[in-house]
Amino acid sequence: MVVLVVALALFFDFTNGFHDTANAMATPIATGAIKPKTAVALAAVLNLVGAFLSTEVAKTISGGLIREGSGGVAITPELIFAGLLGAVLWNMVTWLLGLPSSSSHALFGGLVGAAIVGIGFESINPTVLLSKILLPAVLAPLIAGCVAYLCTRLAYAITRRTDPDSGDKLVQKRGGFRYGQVFSSSLVALAHGTNDAQKTMGIVTLVLISAGLQTGGTGPELWVITACALAIALGTYVGGWRIIRTLGSGLTDVKPAQGFAAETSTAAAILASSHLGFALSTTHVASGSVVGSGLGRRGSTVRWRAIGKIALAWLFTLPAAAVVGGLAAFIARFGPVGVTIDAIVGLTAIVWIFVLSQRERVDHSNAISEVAAVGGAVRIPSKKERRRLEARARKTAAREAKVVRLQKKAADREAAELQARNAPEQPSAPSPAPAGTRTGATAVDGAAGRPNKQGDR
Amino acid sequence: MIDWIAFLTVAAATLIAAVVIVGLYALGVRLYAVSVDDSVPSTRVARAAAYACFAVCAVGVLYGVYLIVPAFHS
Image (tube, rainbow over all chains, first blue to last red; front, side, top):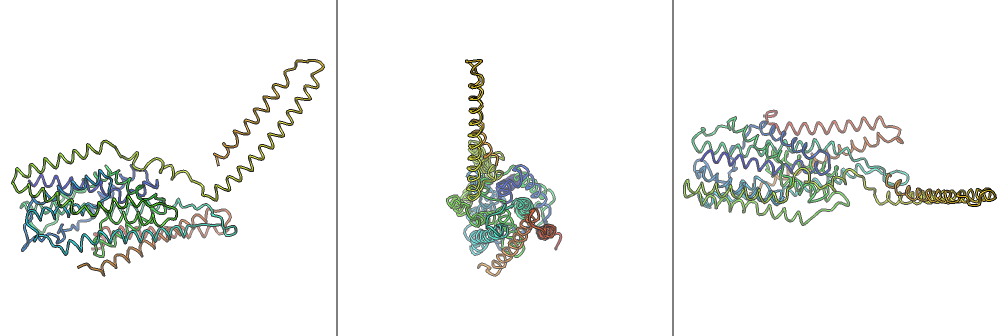
């Protein structure tokens, strides 16, 4: 039983990893600041390091949500197993749909559902549920969104360069934000590693203690830390490309300055929340930041339908995971047989979701569409620039036409002269024909040269 | 119920930190862009100021790392 729970916990850690790669790396991938594969590798390493860095494990994994410990209820490995199953399945479903949903919410949901079925409603602390989970879920994207909005406006206002004389826009040169994105997103990934790997460590330790394999009150053992760190890093490296696509290009088109503003806001919000004692979910913060930065840049489109879908997913995360967790807990009541049924059904569902996901593969090559990637590489001239280019092209075209006309005239004159000179000696002179073709060729050259030059510019 | 003081603290800290870092970095980007312009005479000063901005941002990032790693401050 313990082995089963530990395995499932590690698998949850894995899904947590690939679910949350997007939080840190979706925007740098979308703006082309980091190559997709490099980005997930970087995130994986930082998650691995982060998991080892922080030994200050959240000792009470449920944070008082479930009244555990002395005087409360005894939470059994079976219940934890059921809760984890709910969390893992919901994570898989949201991954299949490419929706960034909070892994912690899924975990809490699963555990809550399992506890309600296994022990009863009195095991749940509704005040804690509201103040620690539901309200932060609303407030986190709000804070992050507002901050990212302001930061994006600020970044664009500061870097807006206009010619003091004519008021024309100069070359904006905002590419420098790409380098900043590398650092800001790395910070998010590191913070994520220290937070999220700990949850699984806490669960595994809880199971070990409840099974009597570890004395209560001690921290996680080294093998638990290592296993959790590796699981989350592996998950991160595999990368939830579907979610990266949603966050990176599904909500809004992210430009480097926006990406930098969004990531800095995310990092600031996560760090502030974990050090000033108001827990916010990384996923909620990151999604809110992306939307905020989308609203902050003039001319960028924000896809409200996609945002609505994500909000709906957030709404359902807790109850859905709770229902699955509760169902699993109900089956698990029938002893080892029930747990076996749970395990088989869960495994089948996971495999089924994976098979479904193979129908339409999304990986590093197509997570952010090529069109978007090219859009980052090629500078599309603004309206004013386009008008200027057009005017210049018209001028060159006129000049070229004039040259062609002059050439033609010269050639005609030459041909006429040649004919006049040759006429007495050779009546059937072939000279007009070559002259004619030459003129034709020049004309064609001129015509073909124009669009070419325009394209080069 | 909900700890509004803590929430406001977090919101304010997030706002200040993010605005300062983004503002400085944007200033750095702007100054650097000025420093590579040919037309402006004081390119040296602009470049030095840009690097100063980036350095302050780097300090901000390092402070973030410091906050993340509990071994440094507990």
